Length: 212
Ligand code: MG
Ligand code: ZN
Image (cartoon, rainbow, N blue to C red):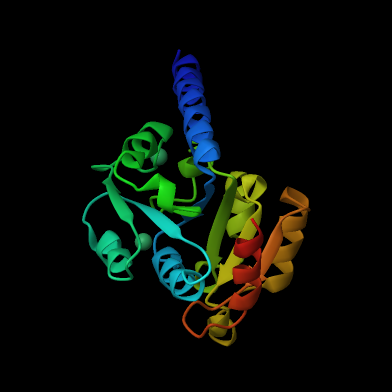
């Protein structure tokens, strides 16, 4: 019974994600869905990306959080159109929430829309939003076992950002384990090792974003 229910929910979500995709396509907007556990650095990544790219691309942001408008306020300070979704305890964004948020954004002025999902490596992987690409962010202090333990998001993502690479000397992060597991899960996944704090490795990320 429960399996059937979940299938129905995901089917309804997929239909709405297709509706969103049509809206994005008509408006000429590319969409990136940012997924990570809490504290991996999504919002700081967004702040730096906006600072670096907003002169050549018009950007928009949808912020997903359980509670608060803290992240939305950080993004709004940079002068980028942003809508904050509060899921009231829900652990992922779904296509319907994004669909409603779109009515609050100046779509005609946006070329690239970032959706910062709720911090969670599990179910955001299963709920399409209408995005062109999923980007998974994981960070060195979280450990090198994350791909093996949460394979679905690493399987579905086009890009993996390994953040906080500057902390490598202070942890037992095992690069070999990390890359061997990724190779088994998704051999075509591109990994950028970055530090959103120091800026290390961010050039490759910016280049990818510009080409999407
Ligand atoms: Mg955040
Ligand atoms: Zn969830």
